[in-house]
Image 1: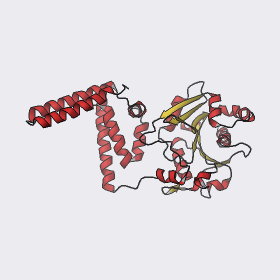
Image 2: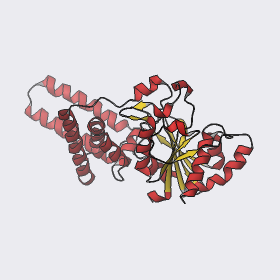
Image 3: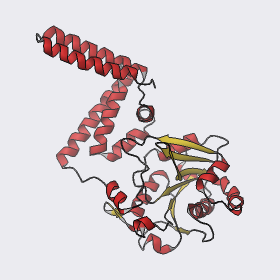
Image 4: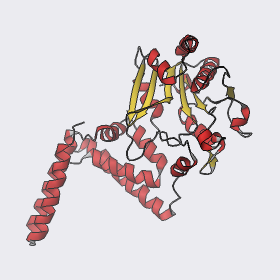
Length: 318
């Protein structure tokens, strides 16, 4: 995937009535929602822009080109039309659109949308928990030619236009946290704010734990008795607390990312990992039984291991 073939446009032209207005300029951590959205956009393309209905929506210090929505077009479709114009002016073949009020977008957004954009499909749209997010989508720029006729028919829904063009849905898990949760009210924005910074020793602990788990997962790729998926999930959990940027990289990793997505999407575990988990638990229990004289300890640990093994074996196979 050539990053220079794609431009990214942040849609920031909404009125934000439920937020009380001026949504793009609301604080998110140490920046604004718009500034944070631009930081995310630059993960996926060196060429970014902001679509607004009027320049004042972006404030005075925005560090990206502003493109103005067509006032005759209602809703987010106006932003899409402006974004298509920007993409054409840049000679791009793909257009990634994202909203300014969704601060937890996944690092693998562009990679997964691009992989899903098969021949015959004009757009790949993100969804989570069965909910479609038409403002988080990767478009073929050639689809711009069909937008005027669609708008002329009296329709302006992004969902409807995507369906008319041939839409592919790409699902992300909504648990434990929905990466597409939007900040439409002050209360939702408060809930989405970055977590308070951990103390340095806690950060180092989580990073060390995550690194060790990744090392064991890497060994599991080559050693049949080491399960890969459980160690990757431990690493993801640890990095999410001590190094979120490493958690994003792990999800987007070409080798380890699929293991994580199998679990997040379907709670699926590869057969190799199932077998390795059962073998390791059986070996551990056998060693405990041979070295411990307490029947209660051996029996209690055995019951726990049987329960865990049962859970592992009844998960879908990846």
